[in-house]
Length: 81
Image (tube, rainbow, N blue to C red; front, side):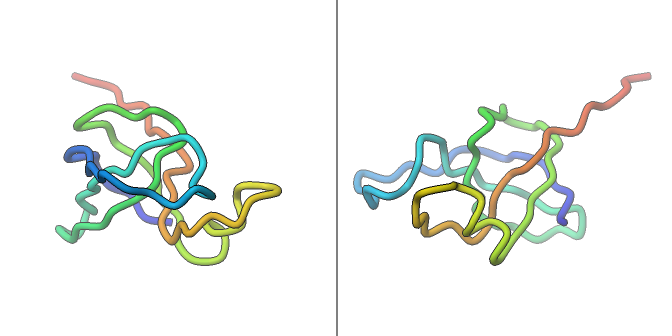
C-alpha cells in the first residue's frame, strides 16, 4: 500500500463505460512521487489516503472489468495538535 495526500482532481471529457462511479485524483506520495488513483470513496483535497495498485485495484469492482491500476482504499484520520 502507498500512503499519500490528495492534491486535486483529474478531469476527462471521455471515459470507458466499464469505469464505475467515482473520480480520478492526483495523489502525492510520502516519498514525493505523484500518481493518478481512482477514488470510489469521495475523498477531498489535501486528505491523507491509502492507495493500492495492480491486480487488487483492478479486481476490486465485482462484476465489472474496470481499467484501474491505482485505487484509493482508505481515508486516514489524523489528529491535529
